[in-house]
Length: 267
Image 1 (cartoon, rainbow, N blue to C red):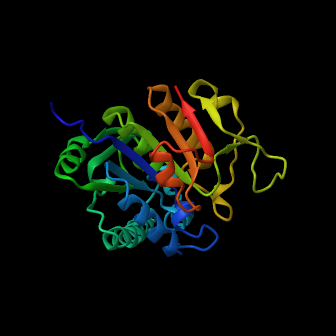
Image 2: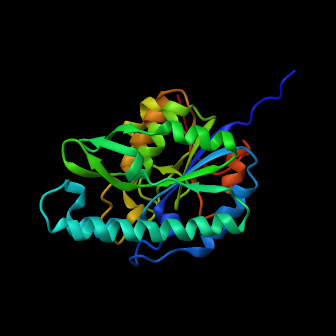
């Protein structure tokens, strides 16, 4: 009798967890190290995707990169953005390496083509081969070529939903800097209540919160955009947990199915 193959899990680590969103291009190295440690204990197949945070959004906003190609002045901005994203990814990869995670980076700009801001094509076969070899593929939100706009920014959240629908993980974890989905922004409203569970079809009725990107303009839709991608995943039959990765141990607990403070979105 053959052994049961390990589950596949997709984890999206928000930019607010690994960067200071109030200070441009400033990492949260302690969080990177802690999250890398938890990932090293998962023991199952895992795809890791991280946001750009303050390494990406301020540059994209300055040059209007979220509007697509509008002129040659943006070329310098694209080069700056790519350099900063590589810097952030390198820091996270080093943290993973130190904890013994066989992380394998994939440059989304080289394997994704978008159309009107949505992923049109992506080299998913490479991820399957890496997983089969025992690697942990690591991707991030990125600027990619776009068939209509010249280029566009594809968020880590969108990459997560695209991969989840095609690779069918057991669970998708969206890690952010709040405990989950609230009735209002908990950073501004003391009466905001955590919504512990949601059905995919009910996500659009929740006002949620806009605020994990305090201090800069989030060019990829903020928390509302995250919820839309989560609803797409859950609507395809895959449970989604939105959990606070600023708190030690929560990533491991949610992956192991233990009780944890979060929002669970189900089909």
